[in-house]
Amino acid sequence: MNVQHHDPAASIPPFAPGDAVIRADHLSIHYDRRPALDDVTLAFVPRERIAIIGPNGAGKSTLLKAIAGMLPPSHGEIVLHDRPLTGTDPRITYVPQRAGADWTFPISVLDVVLLGMARTTPRWRRFGASERTRAHDALRDVAMDHLADVQIGSLSGGQQQRVFLARALVQCSDILLLDEPFAGVDVPTQETFIQVFDQLTARGATIIFATHDLLQAREAASRAVLLNRSVIADGPPDEAMTPANLARTFGGEVMVLPIARPASDTEPVAVLR
Amino acid sequence: MIDTILTPWQHGFMQHAFMAIIMVGVICGITGVFVTLRGMAFLGDALSHAIFPGVVIAFITGGNFLVGALIAAFIVSLGIGAVTQNGRISNDTAIGVFFVGAFALGVALLSLQKSYVRDLNAFLLGSILGVTPSDLRLIAIVGALVLGIIFWFRRELTMVSFDRTFAKASGLNLWFYDQLFLIVLAFTIVISLQTVGNILVLAMLVTPAATARLLTDRMLPMLALSACIGAGSGIVGLYLSYYQGIPSGSGVVLVATGVFFVAYLFAPRTGIVTSRIAYRRHRAHPEHDADFLASGD
Image (cartoon, rainbow over all chains, first blue to last red; front, side, top):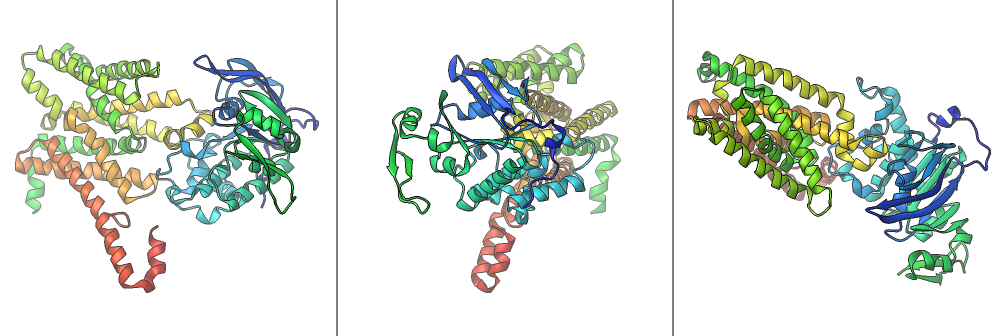
């Protein structure tokens, strides 16, 4: 597996490990005067894998879309490499939820991945050999290359999510945002995702994903941000995801149980009721 | 047989009619692929009625049909956007309100004309036999513009149709591409009005594309098939109209509809009848399981 096709990070000045590549500064977003996010301040550095955790309606998607430059802040701002973000940016790739796409669309797996390069390929020519090679490489990274010519409608949920990840990989950005990447996917897909996350962060990328799956957050993230309109807790998963913080985030709907697991017998695991 | 095919071509008006229907079939077939993939059949229907008052005003004042239709399309699309803004009225409800209202306005305006019945008939059902060389020029120029826009923005239109959130995240301005497609659709409808008429243009937009979708799982073949089915139905429908004396628009649409049902029943893999046969064969010869599974899902 090799995720380093074209490294856009090479063209960007290197930063000290503590430097934020992207941050939200007193970010508030209102829909029809109803606050979806209220005064959120967060800074993200290279090599971090951040899980944004919260119940439905907590503003996880809103936060990701704001960081992706898709939603203008009502107050505050998003700062990318010390410059306020005014719209979408090729250095940021956003992977939407699967449900938003039309999976009956007459398009092959490979063509979906090629669309990830639509904006960097001159419009007067077809996708050429170099784009195809990159798309196949990305599909190999997510163990989907054998299905490159298949119509997307025949894929399982996990396979669809992998195609989305491959489409994000060909964009070679150093900030990857994923909205509920683990929702309804199988175990092999989860493992593939974590492998790809490892490779991306190893080369200096920042990965931010939204989830309401606490187990997934623990396994895939190096940092957990508990969000319910504002930031409830922020830190390494073990420190941030305390029963008290989870109860505050999920509004008392969480039972915290000790569950026996092969790795550690008494690790507390929160379960959504 | 040869005579049957050649006879209509001896008349100049039939030659014009054939040229018009072939161009319209191809252009509607291509635009229609995006209409059906985006689930915009209702908007297509609405737009063809909504531009009616614009066309009528152009007709009465001797102005340009295309300009009248485009202005009407803009007003209606902006109106739909404004009415849905407050979130209480859904998009299809607003489309419904505007399209019937605009159509009624068009009928009212046209009724003020002396030749009302004949004109209304021509607008609603098309008057392909009256196509003039200047009409052909207009269809060719506007059609080339439509196909050019679709080719130039093919990736953007595909992205916006397949996954809007991804398109937006990639930096595409969704509003721009929605409006652009609306204009393309309005262009397509206007140049089709004279050939198939206001009511039946929807069939040219939807039916060939829907048939093509039954036959392929890929975008490019779907575009090619849809264009061919559109043009082919046009030619056959025109012969039907010539020999049976039925209005050309309904002849064309009936052929297209027939082709759709043939594909629905007999399309390789997906056809209702074909898949039954494949299933029977598979039951009778279980040793071919692997072939059967490889050929479909």
